[in-house]
Amino acid sequence: MSDRVKGACLTMGGAACWGVSGCMGQYLFTHEGMDSTWLVPIRLFLAGLILCGFFFVRDRKTLFDPWNFKKNPRNVIDLLVYGLAGVSCCQFTYFLTIQLSSAGMGTILQDLSPVIILLVVCIQQKRGPRVFEVCSILLALVGVFLITTHGSLTGLAISPAALVSGIVSACCVAIYTIWPKKLQEQYPTPMLQGWAFLMGGAMFALIFRPWSMHYVPTPMGIFGIFTVVVLGNVLAFSLYMSGVPLIGPQRASLYSFAEPVTAALLSTRVLGSPFTRWDALGFGCIFLMLVLLSLPAKQKKLNIL
Image (cartoon, rainbow, N blue to C red; front, side, top):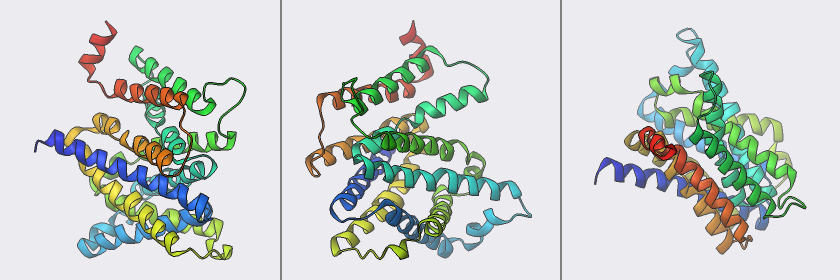
C-alpha cells in the first residue's frame, strides 16, 4: 500500500471517528438527558488520562518536558494557549453546537476552519486573498447560508446561538492548528493533545462543576461516554495525525470531510434529523471549497487561467 493510499485511509478513518462521536453526542443530549456542560469536562479529562498515561509509561521524561519553564518558557505559554483556547474550547463549543442543533450542523460549521486559517495567513503575510481563495470563501459563505436557512430568507433554520457556537468552534480549530507549530516540532502531537485534554477537563470541571448536577448516566449513557472518549478523542486524533505526514495537511483537510459526511448520514438515518435538498446544496458548496483549497498550486493557476 502506497503512502498516499495509507494516508488517505488514516485521515478519513480519523475523520469518520469524529463524525460517529458527534452523532453519539447528539444521542446523549437528546435521548439520555446529558448536558454539554456535564459531558465535555468528563470526556476531556478521561481522554487526557488515557493519552498522558500512555506517554507516562512510554517516555516519562518527554511527557513533562514541555512544562519546564526554565528550559523554555515559551513552550509553557504555547501549550496553555493550544490546550485551553484551542483544543478545549473547540471541544466545548462543538458539542454545544450539536446540543443546540444537530451533529451534522456542528461538524459542517466547524469545517469552516480552513477559511478562517486562510484569512489569518493572509493577515500574517500582509497580502490580500488570491482569486481561488476568494472563490473558496464565497463557496463557504453560500454553503453556510443554505445549511442554516434551508434556502429561505425569512429566518434561520438553526438558532443564532447554535450558529455563533459553531463559528466559534471553527475559530478554535484555527487556533489549535496554527498556534502549536513549534511545539509539534519538539514533541509528539498525541502527547500534546493529552495535556490539552487534561487542562480542558480540569478547567471546565471547575467552571461547570459537573458533580453538582447529580446526573447519573444509564448503561447506554456510559457506553456513549466510552464512545466519544475512545473514538472521538483518542482514536480519531491518533489516526488523523498519523496520516497527515504521509499526504500533507492540504490533502488531509480534504479527506477530513469524511467527518461531516459521516455525521450527516448518521444524524439523518439513525437520529432522524431532517436533511433537505438545501442542506445537500450547502454541503456540496463546502465540499467544493475544501477541494479548491486542497488543489496543488500549479493546478490552481491553470484553473484560474
